[in-house]
Length: 485
Image (cartoon, rainbow, N blue to C red; front, side, top):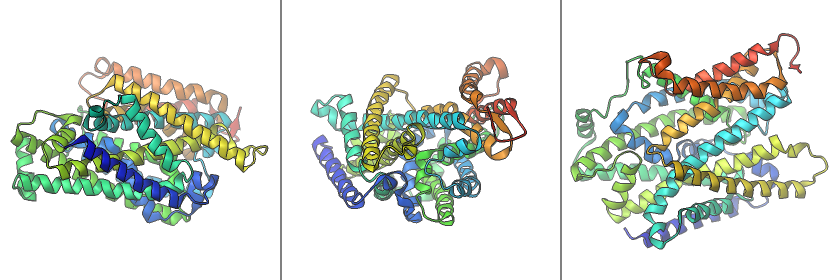
């Protein structure tokens, strides 16, 4: 497939995004940018969040991991549904009752100023690492497929993508992203379905026949029953639940879209709908992974892991499928990157700079500060993407989930302590506890063979991290009052 033709379709797709951004960004203000004026349609938010939840890493890494882990990832998606139910009935009522713009203001109200700043800082770190890891993978594919042939260096490709994202999020923020995410999710899911149909037809397989062929290869195994394995179903389901609670329910990027919905009931419907749709979509990604490996065997293609889907779609399929793959991949990229940059801008302005409490700044000054932060975060994204290029892991979804285990653990501990207990915490000690817990988890993970023998710790490291944070907070707390100093 000609890189020039692919590039033309990328530009055309981006032009459509700009039109949507122009239309939705008219008459936008700071409230539009931060929470969409609390007037977003819950169905649009639910559908658009599928793209945000999946990202380009899911699009490439989940199918690529089937050869090693079969359909084990589906165990995690069962946990996702449990996690979304907890978000809907525990966290969302709390956020709406407090009328929050930043969800980390709960930590300020409940635990204290330093707890609030610590929680917001861990979100900024977590989302920056996670979003740039996702961005790196897709930029790498675009670089190899299109821009490498034009002599464009990797750093410039990343910069171009970031400028494209800035152009359509700069004014409208969340108000625009709710609509662009809907468009992008549609394109991503259409690309997924078309690729599945094409491979089935190419291999002359029906659905039942394809499942049989995958089973013979050992690809369709879902539940793993060895308690020592990191894929043990109890571990995976629990990890999936807590990953959702932290990476969605305690994540400003994900929740700012939910709290942009006017009514709590509609926001709850959004979250629950998302959980079940996401389960079905991820199962389809796993099915695609099995098909890709069957196709690779049939065509004697050696690629595996993150390289499998791009290799087949761009080099071994007709041009129209290559175009669909690129558009779907970009559609998976943009929702995760644009939402992250917008959420990080919101959190830094509200939580770190306290922009809403600055009575000496008028709307024009606040807007100027917000736009400066927006540009600065895009620059930070560029630097972190270059860092991931240096690391160059063969499976970015493994990297992302592992990083999340360390960075979201303190958030889990902070929110759990604030919601479950009525104890007052020593606010001055909170930053030290939240830094110590991930360090202890790193040591546990590094020496787990020496400590536990054949028992493997996997994604449940997130739960251990949150538990250590909770215990640390408990140790420096007392019964009476809320804000111990």
